[in-house]
Image (cartoon, rainbow, N blue to C red):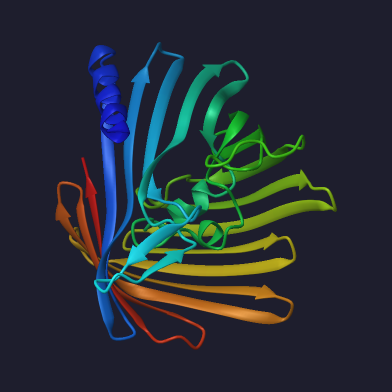
Length: 309
């Protein structure tokens, strides 16, 4: 009932203020260890409106699963067990972001998207198949409460700084210490849609009770006609992450892709590879058969789907 009221409120607000309502759905069919299942990954509902020529507002609701709490499973014979993971779908407010353009650049306020991973995710280009390397390995938070400023210097150099809680959009502030992050990108900021190249770095820092936790990300990518290649080197809390990815655009319907991640911690390497193809059915509908493997685990076969409206 609460979810229906939230969605009804979004629709009413959108029609009242002539904003744009969009959405995207991720789900897959997985075959692993002689078992198979359909899995729901994500549903996003977005509402955006232009308040004025210099001011925009965007709200994003994220429908996903939480790992908090307990859930009880009961068999037909009446035996019940508790699982520590709550697998219900829950609606989260991911963004409530106000963007204001002025002489010093763009200021973002509220629950905003972080500036630590977005360009790397677009260099990779396939969020519906797999999260970006930084996001997948929990090096960053994708949205948080705070304030940010970004500005284009010259034609191709973009810089940004944010001051955030540091806990992410699913958690309240747990201490009195915030996170400061800085990013700098030279070149094209969305290679999944445009040709060109980019080089960039990201730095974030947050104090804890015991020490300072920092994250560095160095990345670069190029997209020329049919091929897109990118790589990144990331450091976070004693861990090192190297990710390399490639996409080959066969035609307007078919792309081939591959990605290889290595996470190093305490001289132990965790390797992850994913390869497959993407078929564009049109009208925001994408299908991707792919395989993936982690270390000594068996191959996992997936069929990923994306719907957009």
